[in-house]
Length: 210
Image (tube, rainbow, N blue to C red):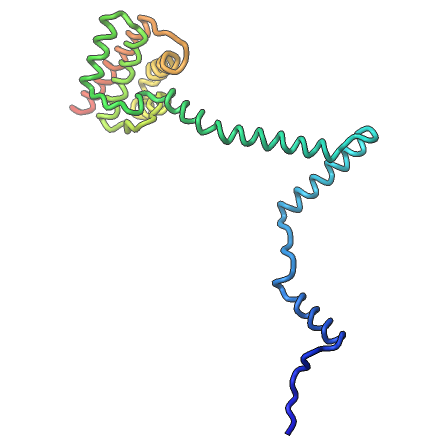
């Protein structure tokens, strides 16, 4: 009886066949580029080709594009690093209340009295608008969440009381100018804020007794 075993040392033809069969396996095939990669390759090739034709003879096109790429990456890095900081600062600036504020209605009323006694119209208007927002939160018209802006509070109030849209819009605009910007409140602005709060309170009482 004879046993046929695989040769330990294949000849050249068998070795080539084995290598070809091994390399034809999917594991060794290169991964085809994605559609996005093909698009960027096409775009870069056309940019380089167009710049080469338009640039003077001897101009280092490749070096210019490498420099441009570094500049773009540096700009992106700066934007990514600084944008969250600007966003956090903006949220702190545009919030009706400070993030750590836990003032009650009584506390805010006291602040209004103190501002009026000192003749500070800006503080009077700011605290009066905050009082208006606390009334809205107390009555379930909005949620006094950290970072709540005057624009959000104004929209919620207008949706609940559309007939007060004009005074709400005016009060919100003045508050934003004084609180966020460089504006200043006048005596008329503070009086308008008082009238808005009075009109709101009156309509809430009528709604309760209706």
